[in-house]
Image (cartoon, helix red, strand yellow):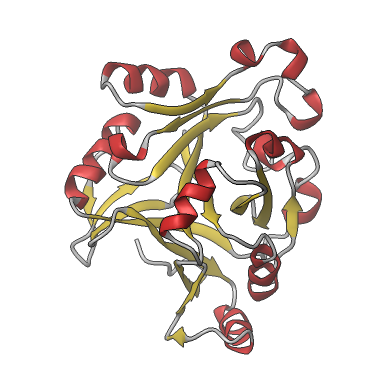
Length: 271
């Protein structure tokens, strides 16, 4: 199983998370105290078992600080997949010579840092260098019990299920990356997942994931995560709140923190 579980936006203002939560009609499901060791603060918006994360630097010299020097108003930072085949994917990373930006496992952290309160006693993650995978930081992770969408998911803490199990909540159904070579980027991602690259109705390269969501790739002058597809029972209240927040709404989409959010009726999201 490989699932599109989370996307991450970097912002100079962590309060952007509260603004988007109000627009989408969701809550902040978790703020992870453990990310402070990287000089960051974060907030995870819970979208029906999927998550939009915001990170903001607490000090100079972080990777997010350097990223925001190029994108001072914020931008798409990372696309995150959870899986139940972490070791298989990790072996492909090694075999294909993909550079690793960061890796954390129970063995590498040591028992003193595997706090079961946050699910870290089983959590494994590998983040892949954007230069090796087409320009967007990419993560695979695994937590014990994550076969169930509302089972274990360490990045969201231990009590997120109390706030995001409402079946009426909007949900992430696709992430789109722009790339100067989208076909190459798509095939790089697909090779790590052992999945085919297909073409959608708009001629874009896509990878269909095991939860029905898609990773999508389009040509652009820059290489980064740039567009998020969200489905909702009724998109109109979300779009109305985006307008009320002062955002320009174009048909079913609005731009926020450097990412275009496309909100479409449940079951009719683009694929």
